[in-house]
Length: 132
Image (cartoon, rainbow, N blue to C red; front, side):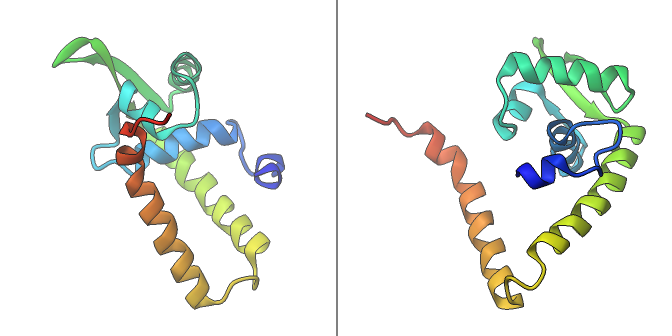
């Protein structure tokens, strides 16, 4: 992660801000409640709120009250935000290829992707479990 963060590919945003744009880009409607976005991002709610405010000022997303619950906020990716995410995403994918290179075979990459997906999908159930 240090290597990715230090890359000069992020342009006008940080790697964490890219994570927000990437997460929204993967949603069918390109929008989420701020609370739900926070479940996907490794930031505190206040930090994410400030980040979304900055991305809103840059024109990469919008924030609006949730029509079904006025206390909530809907965060939506703009066309400009999607364009920035895609451009940075292409550069990021190229860097991943450079850093991973030939370290893993095609079969190993397929296994890694399956395992990562399984772990990602298990997170909601894991986060509800009580730990003692």
